[in-house]
Length: 340
Image 1 (tube, rainbow, N blue to C red):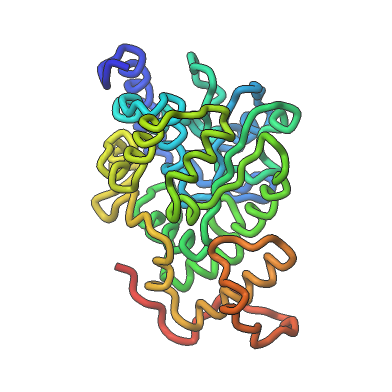
Image 2: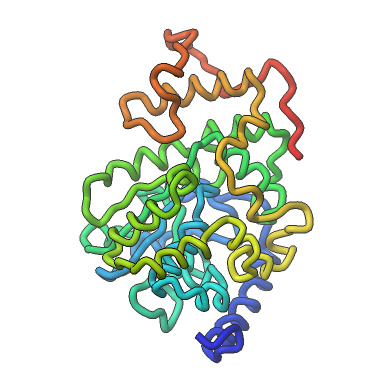
């Protein structure tokens, strides 16, 4: 790739600019529902989701699937680098949404011309809305999950700068909406429970944000193995070096600063904010944490343990194991911590 002025990239960028300008005029902060799942108006439409649901999938397609704010950008950067054998020139010259376009957006991946093979695509779709053709193909899905407590904090901050999203209100109001699934793409619990049913299939990789934080190199090696793209020592080191949070935050092709404030207003907060695990502890009150834990235990009962789950010896017993006939979603008895 010759850099940002490369002819195809320049032509696509002008197309994106025109489309982004048009879309930004339609962002209302309102949601529509498609088969019960909320989507922001303007970025998505019932027709764009329907197109994704019924799209043709190729056997060498690679899908990066996440619930929002679960490390999508991080995984796109890693996969982009792996496919280029660690060469960073692609991630430095092509916007991230062109490298791994979204399946379900109005400017959707399945309608873009001239995509090279293998196609890398991103999606937040729950499994029941994902392209049906995938399930009869050899295409690969990398599903990246994250501690839902960190997800809700990150999504709260994102909602304050993303023009297409509803005003999040107070942190406590937003937390209640998150627990009820009244946020974009619906319930986190439904999303992860749907996708982990794919575990054990050779074309599905489940990996977590926490694993990447703890062992980035080892996680990159797992992803390389899954994609059938083994790398030498030097190439592997380059992938790791160029996919750290600091490297992504400094890369204008990956940090979304190319988007205008009419779409993403980073004057009031960065899209790539902290990139850490456990930040929720700086935001949840004791009451919110206890209430969320109760909902989490109920929703995830019988499932595998995840890196963010406490070790058995650290787990406190449920103070009220009997079901409440009218449980209220995560309500704090003390005022929530102000968000910086």
